Amino acid sequence: MMEVSTHTTSTLSRSNSRTSSNSELEKELNDLDLSGSAHNKSNTLKKRISSSRTPAKKAKRIRFFRNGDKFYPGSTIPVSVERYRSFDSLTEDLTRLFEDSVTLTGAIRAIYTLDGKKVEKVDDLEDGKSYVCSCNNEGFKRIEYNVSNSTSTKNPNRLSRIIRPLSPVKNGGSNGGTPLKEIDSVVHPRIVTLIRNGVKPRKILRLLLNKRNSPTYEHVLTAITQCVKLDTGCVRKVFTVAGVPVHRLSQFFEEDDVFFAYGNERVGANDFELEAEESKAIQAHRKTLRSSTTRTGPKPKMPVKSHNDTFVCVDESLLNGSIHPDSLPLELQAKYTLGSVIGDGNFAVVLKLKDKQKNTEYALKIIDKSKCSGKDHYLAAEIRVMKKLNHPYIIQLVHDIETMKNMYLVLELVRGGDLFDAITRVTRFSENQSKIMMKHLASAMSYLHSLSIVHRDIKPENLLVELDSDGNVVLLKLGDFGLACEVTEPLLSICGTPTYVAPEILMESGYGVKIDVWAAGIILYILLCGFPPFVSPDNQQEQLFDAILNGYFDFPAPYWNNIGDSVRDLIINMLQSDPELRFSSEDILDHPWLTSDIMDDTRDPNGVVIEESCGPLETVMGIPITTQ
Image 1 (tube, one colour):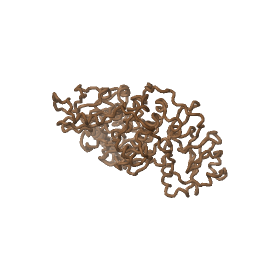
Image 2: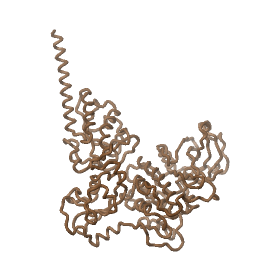
Image 3: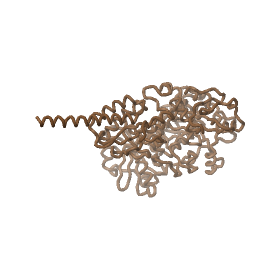
Image 4: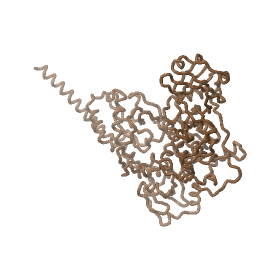
């Protein structure tokens, strides 16, 4: 009888201990104040954690942000190895917690430190620190996350909610009251001019608005606050240049593009009267869509075609003679049938291959490693980057084999030639054809940039096109990744091709992925008129660089007479000298010229037919090769 009583007492003691521990954990979760919009998810999370065993030690308080979302204030939860026996169990709970607060593209798969280091184990998380959650294969996005509030204080997100709006809710709503469907129809990338309230002449600033920083009215106010930095704090009131109050998100994307920014201070009667100096500053930032200039004299020329010298490393005997199938690695012999040499560019040899089972044609590029002295790092970087890529508008690396003597690359075969040759033959393309090519290029760039990869050598020679039976471009693919690299901090090395080089590269001030957007803007300009926006009259490189750094270009008659304003606006925004104001690759895809089916091109809407006398071409990795 005594033994039973002792056992019962012991059991009750353990039960009371567990109940007490669970109550403490419930209190701890309440004190942490999980993100308000995720309250229901946090209740589920509490139940799940409460049913687990009593932790051996106090849990770490960890704050988690959504990758690339500088507006989301983060959510703080207790984390311990007792509660999360595996890394996957933690990411599962984070997915549930986040999905009602932010827009997720999939389940959370990775966690990074704020400086981009990947976290592999729950044990690696440090108490009181902040981390970034990433979905699927997203690369870490290095932005300024809202880490100003300490995670050790009660209700760490409360201040964040006051000064920063939450990200738009996933299922159609937002804290600004603007449904996501309306956001898609209203918000498009544009640069606005802001007049900072203060003593005249007031400070004039510019800000790029897009779907990333302007999904709600409150987000726009936050972005303006960060830009103008009022002495009185947050921007509370915004007016058009005519003095009309701005109360709706859509007003930021209508005809007006100049706004006054105020805090809680009173608006004066003459505040909306601009001084001459203020008007001059505003006009200095504006570029007219319709140039009043007429270019006389000879038409500017395209630059001389540059050859890819990444691989100055091919055995000359391969160029002068045939290659026997027995000389290939056994793995290639077993899988592919070797065809003829289809290309003998300056520095590479390319052969046709056919998959024996799939009957699919590929291209084989053979590189002699002994000739790669001093350039082997380019080859290694290209292969490393291409192995990560899988996109319909990027040349696919199918197979790579390295032997003692050679490197063998099996690549996707693209028929049609490179874009430089196409431009040389037709001079200029219609808006319709240019739109197809720019959509494909922007899509490829957006994919690369989402992985924090910058190409660094986007030019017509590295863009490969496929044509239909009428000679119209139906597909564009990006190739040649010899200069591509991952961006973890501002890059300083000077590289690229002079005509397409961005000003920040020349200034050696540090650059990132937006140099690719600049190069794409140069290409779009060329597609429509047949010559680049920045040229040197005497064909001197220094003069060209001065023109690029100056940033001035126009749309001279008669070459731009029949080209619409919408595409001109896109070019202007792609060629902004300030990278902060320059469109991103996603902004290009969101621009009305690419999203609208309406064409204002008065020339042939079906594009330009390439002369058949030029003959079809096949191209691989940017090397033009004639069909055998």
